[in-house]
Image 1 (spheres, helix red, strand yellow):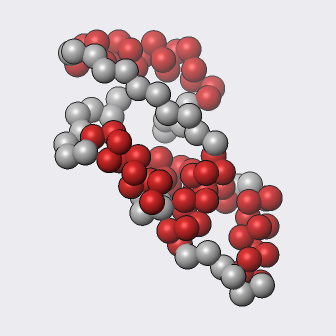
Image 2 (spheres, rainbow, N blue to C red; image 1 turned 180 degrees about the vertical axis):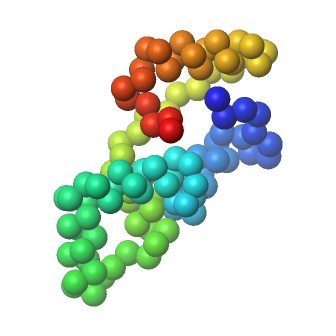
Length: 101
């Protein structure tokens, strides 16, 4: 459970990841880790570097996030108890596909 978000909320956090500036934390880091394990994605980055057209770090981070093919959904609940119950239900149902560490 992410907990309450200040400022721009979930949309603001996702905007940071989408910009490539969240590569070293949470979702951005996990997407980058997954991309670095993907030989096709990594080969494309190497080919770019060898041809003198290497991506900037933030663009590579965004590319890693795009490569992940994520779908994001959320639900608003009224209480912390409801949030915890929903989290446990989703973890039980979707554990194999979740990126929680």
